[in-house]
Amino acid sequence: MNTGLIVQGFKQFINGANPAELLAKLVGMILTVIFILAVFNLIQYFLGKFLKGKLSVQRDYMVRKGIRYSGFVLALLYVFHSMGIDTSAILGAAGIAGIVIGFAAQTSVASLIAGFFLLSEKSFTVGDTITVDSITGVVLSVDLLSVKLRTPDNLFVRIPNETISKSSLVTITRFPIRRLNLAFSVAYKEDLEQVRDILLELAAQSQYCLEDPPPFFGIDSFGDSGINLLFHLWFEKNNFWNLKNSIIIAVKKRFEAEGIEIPYQKIDIQVTPSG
Image (cartoon, rainbow, N blue to C red):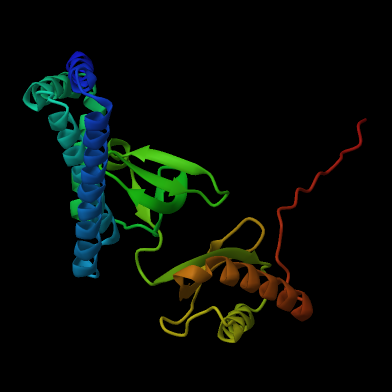
């Protein structure tokens, strides 16, 4: 934007005008700006009502933001025009500056393009929990340049769209139900059928475990200290920690009550007398 043109236009606007006329122009300009912004707010409001349920959260967010910014730009152009500033020259200078900045900021352009792909793919939406590489958080917003997350420890994280497009992305809450995978061992002396029945009974008693799909019990392998088992439970996506904590506590208590041993690695050291 050409600052010199704006300063020159402002001087022309105030020079040679008597206070009464200047005040009337300023009041008229302010009222018109308020009217323009109010009209765009109404457009944003009614369009939001019309599109409610027809667009995803992030698309609705982008439409609203686009309308808001359009109102600001139109109000600014009106102010320049009222002050006698040549808006075509300003727009031309802004266009040239935009081209220069675009070439200079290749990362931003790449993130912008990646943002359009993210919006079109609909891999996640606002409110989903996602993992990008080693970062996990709830999606706060999906913008054209970046995605904002809130981590479980309440940190704000901004990830450029270009980074997301090049990384492994996991949408944890994409589907309504998830599976909890538990892996543990029991001693070789234990009755595996008894262990299976106890685990399935605890799953049936859990308020967080779903009956359909049913729990899965499997024998994985022979380990160094015991037999490795698999136990898979299905749950509604918001009950991950409720199920995991409660089922592990229940398994430990029940195994202790039944005398079932959960082995741990042991090291036998044999000392041979010298001489």
